[in-house]
Image 1 (tube, one colour):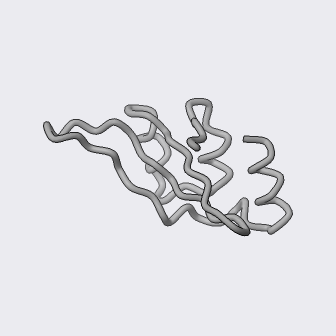
Image 2 (cartoon, one colour; image 1 turned 90 degrees about the horizontal axis):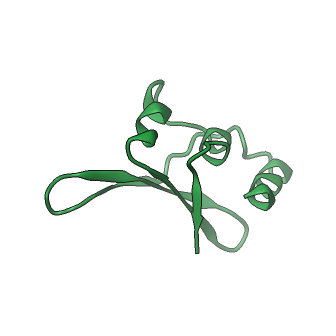
Length: 78
């Protein structure tokens, strides 16, 4: 996760809004969290914030990449 933060700092994108994400909902309409897609040079990193912790990120609109990556429940997926 720290490597991801350093790459975004280098590209000066850490303070940008995370605009590409999807909410994960099952067939019973139960929310399981939000999956964020963070663009880097050659690929996109996928970071999951599980429910109900993701709700606090959207209180003031879309969160920044820094808020997503520094969230204590954030999990980077391969």
